[in-house]
Image (cartoon, rainbow, N blue to C red; front, top):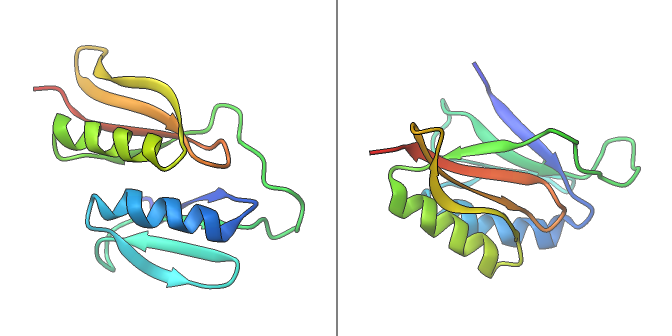
Length: 123
């Protein structure tokens, strides 16, 4: 259903370094590496995550109420994503833990302020 998700950035090199390391935890690699857009994926048939400088060349801004959820295999991987994001300069929006009795997740903001959620089903 979803082919790819894009979040905006004002510094593609800095954002690319952040996501190279962060998404590498899930085995994702760059699938597209263009001057204004970089996308990561695990295989050609699966959805991709991308960063891009805005097409209209205005500054990238954070979408109020927008969030991208990244699936983790288990609570340990949720913690690894969260820890890596914080180490890379992301900011805490909610430490790893159980939410709504069904999800184990954590929330961060990337270097441009985009909100990310790392989650798995609670066990």
